[in-house]
Length: 155
Image 1 (spheres, rainbow, N blue to C red):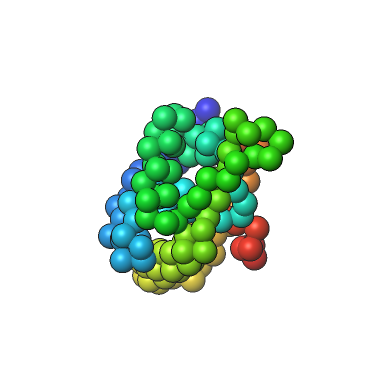
Image 2 (image 1 turned 90 degrees about the vertical axis):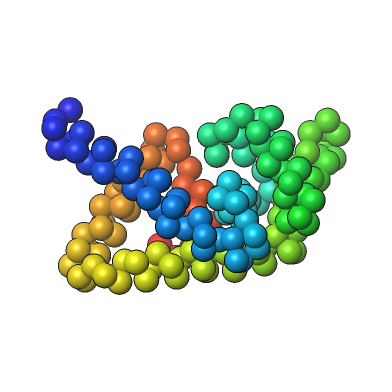
């Protein structure tokens, strides 16, 4: 590992909290969402998931997922669906309202980030796109899933 690896690692680690802060106020108008709720909606946008799957994907404990989902059920954004093969198990799925809030909040977040990125010259934006695509692919090869990318995205 070189000093350059460490320098890029520090930049990447700084990017997460900065992105979180930049988006936090933008996702609230779309459905009065907390950031964990926003991320959960994005994680569920492709298909229903079990609490265990969500805990792994989001990097949080199952009890935390349960509390998060309970609040989202109360808001009408998600529903628990009992597994017909194993009645002890359930999947969490977006409701119609959840799909709509996810769509609106995602569009607001994407538009806000795109506006921030408009301050970069095209050459820098192109380099960032290439680098971030490579970094995401590297993380995915290590087993980390990109919850922000859905199968509907055209890469």
